[in-house]
Image (cartoon, rainbow, N blue to C red; front, side, top):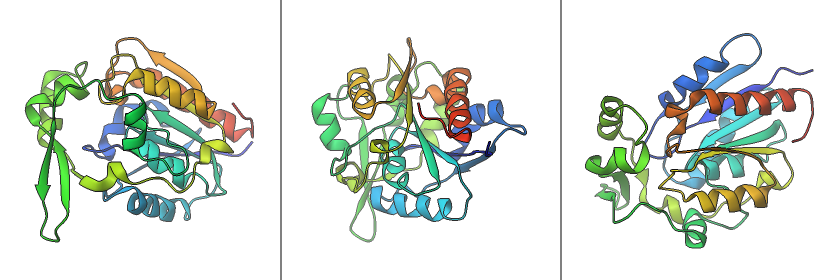
Length: 238
């Protein structure tokens, strides 16, 4: 049995520290763990960054992506040493699909315009979430003080990232797992079910959990990731 490396990839508006509660539950001698800070400069750029990290690791690798970075692990996961994918409230696009395309199938349940653009000197723009709405939309089940800090410590996402299609879909040839909360607003639960079913993922639904179940439900998320890593270590498919 090979020792798996679990690579955690955070979503938009967050950073690698969001994985700490899950990371702590998996720490020990069974797996190697790495939480990657992707630059959030668009799907292609983030895939290239993650791929460069993967190239320096031995397999089997399990990629774990939250939210936006479901798209990132979908494309980067075609690397030979990647053995499996775990989507944590993550987008699961097919080849040639963007996040905008997926949201067109089942729109977000978050009402109104909660994204705030900011122009950059190079003529591009980046997006962040209105701090006043952050907790209600993204993490209503996270303690208020923690959510308030998250809202004021966001890492913005390049505005065009949601429109970028992925150029490959690793889930077509590799096992995948999906976990999401039924109270997810940014990504409708119906879209999660559609996407995970299409990918043939083993699915765990968490009743009443928000989009940030990496923080509010670390035990459940940790159990899913552990199951995936053990299966991939043994060369088993889901």
